[in-house]
Each structure stands twice: as structure tokens, then as C-alpha cells.
Image (cartoon, rainbow, N blue to C red; front, side, top):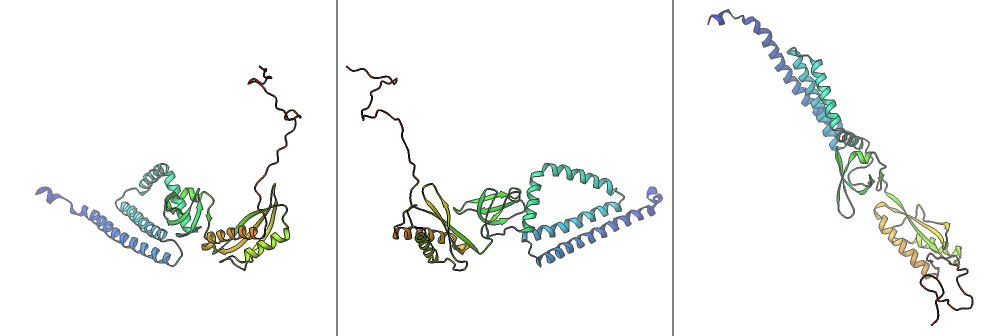
Length: 288
């Protein structure tokens, strides 16, 4: 009792004030962090950013305010923020080195979501994979192939390679190459191919179909038939065009030669039509 009577309670006042100030600061920090998250989400909802990216940046704004508030609370109790920040920097560097590959995929995912070279639903060829984009995540992108296989590709591999967005445009050009025999009349062949290209179902008349004499090959004269169509009709139009070209050339008697090779044999044996009998070692055979 005597110790309590002799205790200087006035020394507790600064500590109590620090605790009260820290509590008030924490409350303010949580309120501001929630406000920052909501404000960031509302501002990004007015943009074209991906939903995943909106959630990421809104959460990032909240945790940034929480970290700053936590450092301020430590400063209230006299803890050196500079030394604490140095420890965090060292820990962050160590974690960054350990997760270098993962952070690379994360950064690539951010770039894909910001610049949007493709979106979910597009058919894309990238990183050696061709398929329909199902989902773009922060670390990986999901693809479904034409034979219904699910592929999970790291974002770093996609962003670091050439990206072909096959369905980016609404229209595509369908090309079919065909070879005709050298005896065929060029004017007749061109006329047949032009009439065929103009009659293809779902093919566009504008841009108009085109027929080009592309090459004088080793055993055939090669042509290129081009028809524009909707991207969604590409394969159907390509099949119709290929079938129609073959049928039209057959109907007009225009041949499509196979590759040929002429072989000339010189000094291959006796000229009198008789075969020489030889032994297994190449010498003349003896008669019985």
C-alpha cells in the first residue's frame, strides 16, 4: 500500500495519451483504408479495366493505407520507423529474389490486363498455344483448345512472345492455293476460278474475290484464290471454296498434275538387250 501511495501516477499520463492516440489513429486508418478501397473501385468501374485488375488495385489501395497507418502508430510509441522500414526492405528483397519467376508472371499479368491485347472469348495463338481464352488471371491465363483441352499458361511466357489475336477483326481473308497443268489455257483457268470464287456461299462481294497467278512451279502453274468472309465463317468458307475450285476445274477439263520426276539412265548395261550374269562379288559367272 505504501508503494502505491508513493507511486507517481502523473508519469502514466503521457503513456495513456500515447495509447489513446494510437487507438484513435488505428480507427482512422481502418476508416480511411476502407474509403480508399471503395473510391478506387468506383473510379475504375468507369474505365475499361478488367474486373480482376479492379479488385487488385482496390485491395492494393487499402493495404497501402493500412501499412502507412501501422508505421504511424509505431512512431507514436517511439519505435524508429526508419529501422523498421529497412527490415521490411531487406525482407522484401529476399522474398523478391525467391519469387522472381512468380513476380515476373504477376507483372506480365498486370500488363496483359492493362493493355488488353486480347480478352476472354478471343481465339489467340501465343507461347506455342492456340485456343480460346477462358480467363486472364494475375499469374496465368486459361485456354480451351478446339479439341476441348484446358491449358494453363504462365503470363510471362505469353507476354514475352508474339501474340496473334485470330478473332480480333470481324472479317478474314480465305486463301486457297491450286496448281494446274502447263497445257491449260491461262485465260480459261482464270475465268473459271473467278466465277467460282464469286459464287461461294457467305463469301463477300466487297472486298471482291481475287485470283492471282502466283508461281510457275516445277510441274504445275500455281494459282491463289482469295475470298473475304466473316471470321466466324472462316473454316466453312474455306471448305466450300476448296471443294468448288476442284469441282469447277474438273468440269472444264483442267487437270491438276501430281509432282513428277524425269529420270534419265545413261550407260546402264549392254546395248544388245542381253543381261550379263554376275556372281555375288560382281565377277562373271562360270557356265556349267
